[in-house]
Image 1 (cartoon, one colour):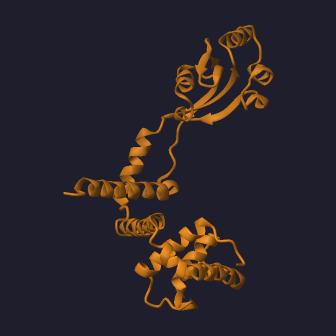
Image 2: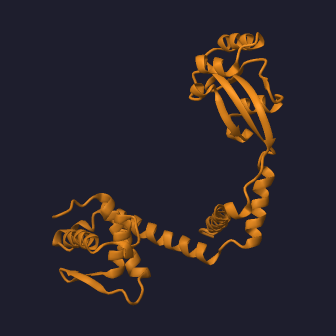
Image 3: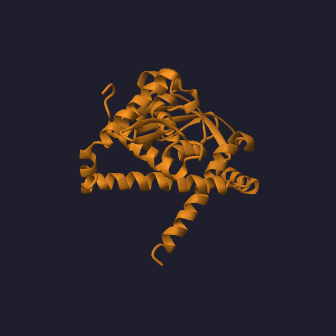
Length: 264
């Protein structure tokens, strides 16, 4: 063979064959024949898209020829007399069944989503719910991360005596922000671990924590430099994400309904 045949390729081929049987357009045509079995254009295109990760129409002639040769090799193997015998093996039968069920389930899910698109009202309602849950403020802070509570307490003592926070962070912090003087930039509370966020929220702008703050990463001394209102993203900037969320939730409800009625 010109190309090694990998298990993943065989899985892709199984899906392609199933799709070609159940979902091929009427105008699919044979592009090659191997031992009396046709390779149709829809199977080639699906396999090509899976192999090259791009639309079949964007493939060059050389790419199509290479992929067609791979398919020809696979068809050669699967049309050998030994293949008919192996198809009765329990493990092979299970793999074929899984490929069939997986491809068909994906087709059903795709069909459901295509026929149940999110409405504008649903998108707006989900956006409003997300905005309602978003934090009202953002904070700009620096921190110094050390391994022990005593080390953090000593640093607070230095700050109490007039030491510069950024210089102490650069010299002592074990966190990745140390080279930048412990600067964490702007963040919303839900972007940090709970104890860290809780400490920042209760500080005044320009104040540092009077006691060390412990997280899973170690002990922190935190300086809250500034705060501002958290402006949520515009609906249009997140419409596609919100639409996908609404549709996925709709599909999950559909699937849950199927689970509840299964066997009844």
